[in-house]
Length: 363
Length: 254
Image (cartoon, rainbow over all chains, first blue to last red; front, side, top):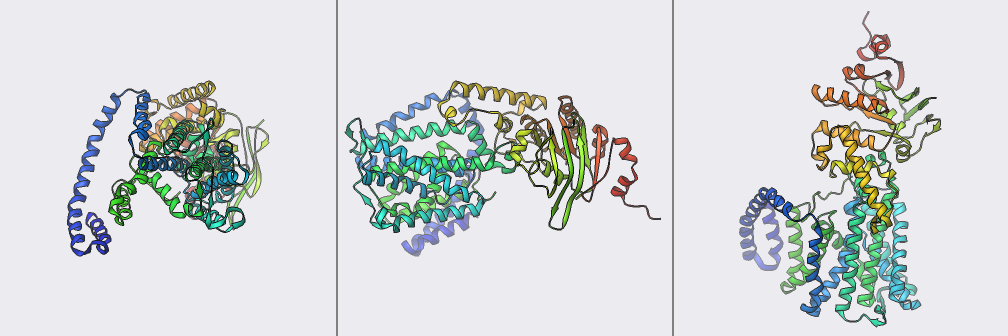
């Protein structure tokens, strides 16, 4: 097994660095992979001890607020470039948390999530440039529009299950992008919409990147809290129950179709919010930002963090936004490296960094 | 007045008559067993009663109200709950969460109350949690509340399913082969459990293959064969009914 993985990865490198480097990589990997396995076995043995140690921490999780301090200090210590990437990862956290509701809790595979992101972004762009509506008025309007779009797209799609649903959502994602690309008179087609006004707060325009950072962090924290609270209520329980067993859920009196609709709409709500923030930050939107690859990226964030885990999804989003930036020096290898990382993760920890459940398309 | 009345119920799958013209009524309280060889239509009957499949013909009334052809979740809210032949627990959830899901329909707090953690929400969640413990205590499962449901032993999982069905607040419980795959000790335990459910005032419909269980706890037995009801009566009568013996053992060669 590990030799196959090593061989596969070194073959991937062959075209870039030639036979010599690839064979070195092969040898290194054949040694490294069993070693990693050993480490993971040791980790598993150590796990009960770690859990007892974790049990000694105070039950009240409020001390975790301490974590907020470094987060809030980022604009003071980081360069503008770092803050810029952090803003982007904040937007992706909101998106990934939204998708996590649909894929992670309710177990509906959505491959066209970017459609809602696009609808949110274009709603703000159009409301602002055409009607001159400001950010704080346009934001709720765009979010409501996106949520409604979520409802409308879900009604026909939810008759399907599993892989079939995934394909239909993929289709919806493409339809939305193609409409944005071709409806020139309304969306200005591939040229996109520029000149979107930045948000302002209490009369002051939010123009500096650090201001955006705090705006995005505010919404990330908001989404985090709302997500945790909804998860721990009858709605969250119903979603997870539907993921676990749809038939048993309806036998428990849960209207499964209605709760699936809620889930899709709730997910779309966050995508709409993220889209709005994206349009306000970039001050420019075009269909190019909303391709299928974007849907895949968001799904990857949910999966590598651990499906269904709020904290895991946040870490997944941050890793997947920062990793390509950190690896920028490696030039053309960086996407390859990110891809390899994903393969490694799926081989050694298929449930994601923090997840409990394996990823599967079934049911 | 009957609690549950089934009139001329039929379900055809294409040309196959899974159940044909079945009628019976259930009064408040008893344990009614439904027996018959494999493929007799027992589970199909349960699926019709709980709204998972729509009967081809005939009617079902619960407290004189027709429930024919309405959805499974509504039937559950009206007071008929069930367990499944192949256990269907929410495996990744804890035992107590399984029981809390069953009380879904009785929780009033919506999205806004949950997000704002209104006092009403907190009170209700606490009450649901306490109530869930009570249901677990009834079946002696309270020590397992925090365990992941899918990780527990088979016999325990069957009991959790019963606790979950009970937690919906249903008056009528449909148990589909509750002792399947159990050892004699677990089976005896399950018999006691079912008798306790009767003491709680629940009406129980039971599909069961183990004749010791059926004869031991049933007040009345209905026998199905090839989708048709061939006999109905107390255990003693059923035991000596020639039609039943024929269905199970075949005709004597003359």
